[in-house]
Length: 442
Image (cartoon, rainbow, N blue to C red):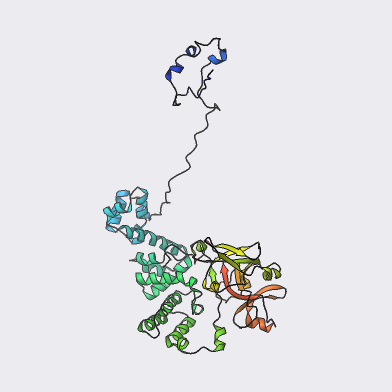
């Protein structure tokens, strides 16, 4: 006997027939027994539980940017009034710039705004971004006399420094005003300041100061000069330009040495070789390992553990086969994957990364990143002899690990160490000033 359910009688059921619900007696007219009274009750199509559940609230909401603060004199304007202000450029550029995103919120698109006001979409974006940069400078208490320089035609200049942090923007503004830079000059300055921290491995980098915009710009020209043949007019012109914009005395001296050709034309003395030994300090970027064409896998030891573990760590990691499978001589509990930077390219065997919880273990210069942050010190265990006085080594001093120059270690009578430091890696940070942006790649 086929049993009927409430689901089969549901009008939403694709096999539902209106004949089945005319009267309850028709359902049982041909049955040989009398149906129980309970079956004569009206059939309910309500799903169990009978209490209807509250309708689920729609969680997705289209993104709407927060409204930009409008100047007081424009807040009472309707849409037609805002379009009129933009079409006739009524007021200063940073006053009517917030009207553009307010029109976007009303349903206008950049092409429609351009059609009505005559402001191209590119200029609309420039005005919006420049006004935001200007607001950030005002919030950071930038000198009003400097800001007044951008009241007329300043959108093109402020737009170019959009990639810099708040502190860098303030210094860039000072340099732009003092040197009366145009939009192209502001663009070169912003790129030089953004690029400077990532050039630590380049020759002469330590002679230029990151906190001085002129030095960052000078280093860019200095670096570009080395792309030309020596001697050549292009190289000399780039060095003269670098000397003209340099601010610090150390930067000027470095450019002068290069301009006079002392380092390229003369033989280097053996004593001078140690003076030019520098350990690269690199800030990791988010996603940098994924973008790298080749990587280095290194065992990791903690600085507060027994120093014997550093010597026991695997000496070499090899990768091979179609899938680049990594093979090591023995197991290890901590590993790190780093891009194959130039400092790591020659590290064949004996490489190890030592994790320090405090970056102050490194003997920084007074004006270099003297910060409390976690770092990785990469060293070469195959070079244990303290040879160069100005090279850096990792050694056991007074019962703890210490990174110091060869000269200081020799004064303490240390002639052999755990290894030679080849690289210092800083952890990536969301709010770091030297983070990469999509527009930063060359």
